[in-house]
Amino acid sequence: MATDLHRTVTPSGPEPAGDPTTDTPVDTAAKADQERPAAVRVQGLSRVFDGRRVLDDLDLEIAPGEFVALLGRSGCGKSTLLRILAGLDREISGTALVPRRKAVAFQAPRLMPWKRVWRNVLLGLDGSSADRARAERALEEVGLGERAGAWPKTLSGGEAQRASLARALVREPDLLLLDEPFGALDALTRIKAQHLVGEVWQRHGCAVLLVTHDVEEAVLLADRVLVMDGGVIAHEVDVALERPRSLTDPRFAALRAGLLERLGVDTSAAA
Image (cartoon, rainbow, N blue to C red; front, side, top):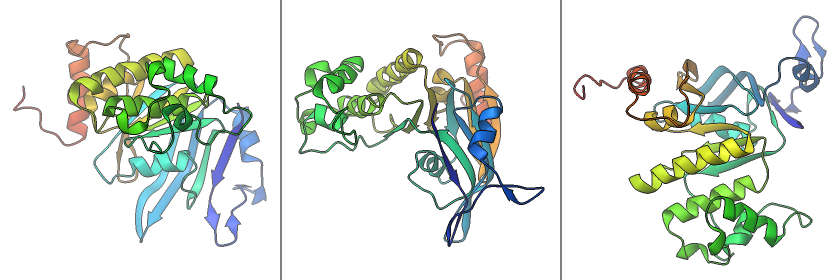
């Protein structure tokens, strides 16, 4: 798997990685490859905005094919971390090793209104790989095969989000980054979208990082749930439940309650 290495940025450019015992530059990417395999390996990652440290010496590993959900209060740095992994923010200190083949889907589908759906799916691909048949295969996978020639303004919210997911999948990513992709959907459409993402992940076998505010969604989809607080991963839970998962499973309810408690939500009244 080809990887990209993002590392500390100084006024003169990216700081060379070095051996802390000798200050000798080392090939961090090659060194990491010799260790246990990881789709994502983040070490000592920090990001400061206007003097406020949003990420504070954060460490994270995601295994190949692992589905990880990231929870946390608004403003805790979840989306900042995702943007860094996507290569959209490089003003960092620390290192982030990520697959070169990665794709992002945001809460807003971000479809170009002057391009038909299939052309939106191919945005950013070079000419040799940007053919309509490839786009239609991705749209078919998310249940939008018949809407390939439609204009984005004619799509429902759920359809637009599926088109955004198809645009991510057409890149055949080793890492799929999802930034609250279901946040703007109605309840029924959201449930359908969650099931679709779970099915797509199982078919493709890529690593997934899902940023969400929905604890139930995190437990439903993820192998592991992380809670961010204070700019670091403050808590993590392995979700050792067989799939498909049931919301009525007492183990599911216990995991959900424990995570809500970590997030400072009092569930005693609901009980």
